[in-house]
Image 1 (cartoon, rainbow, N blue to C red):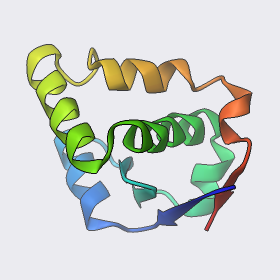
Image 2 (image 1 turned 135 degrees about the vertical axis):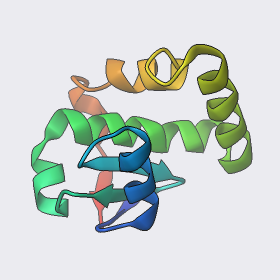
Image 3 (image 1 turned 135 degrees about the horizontal axis):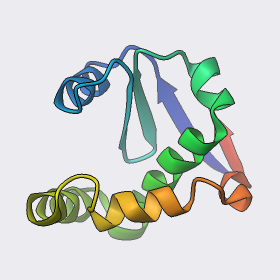
Length: 106
């Protein structure tokens, strides 16, 4: 079982929302999903968004904290946010029902 913490009203997610010019955002650091402009309950009801963010948790687990951050930032600098391979992979997991198996949200 993997525990994932969800933090509402996070300043980190607020910064992400501003960068993306949106009113809602989720950003992941390690196994914590930071939210802005959306409650934990509403976020968890949006299953595709939840699966997308959980995919990022798995990416952190695969690459490690520092390496993932560096790779993500380099990828974004070269290809842009939308074409970033880590974002593309997370989008591909949005309909993957199995990604939430053995996940506990706290």
